[in-house]
Image 1 (cartoon, rainbow, N blue to C red):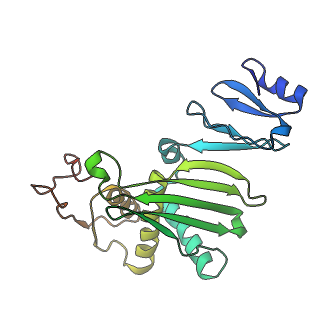
Image 2: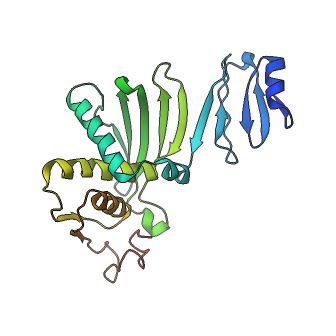
Image 3: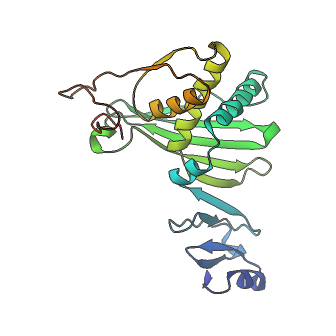
Length: 234
């Protein structure tokens, strides 16, 4: 491995090695190494060198949030995906689950949408006791592959993505089944509540009732989302 902070491109051309920018440096990985994956918290770029140049992005939740489409557009995209699934043009197999103590579990959620060259898999865990540890109940990663070659192209945090996608699916159902502007009610007042409220507002449903119960083990009813961290709100 060779590092040239000043001329990463030149070094890559001269040596014929796969290279890319990580943490401000040029990283060259020899062909003879078979393959290498380099991740850096300082830069959202990794390099996979297998005798050819290939970049893999790492996106944080903040990156994903900045790139998400507006809620109404997300609903339209999900609507198209659901229609494709119903027509057999996309695949979403039953998700396998593994289990951990305390009612916790994790799912693998692969999917393919060949007409749009989309291939990927989400790995997500649900740990009900995490809010008491100051951690989110759900956490995970999304791997996005090149639809032609299968090569991983991006790894991204799945928190913001899950919140947006779940709410968009609900929004697509509301758009199809509810009258315009009809009242809507749902249960739960965590992360999903906030993403659902944004979608419902974008769809013109402003009369929304949210039912939230008291978390087991608490000694007082939960307060509004702006004041209660004890129940997983921020």
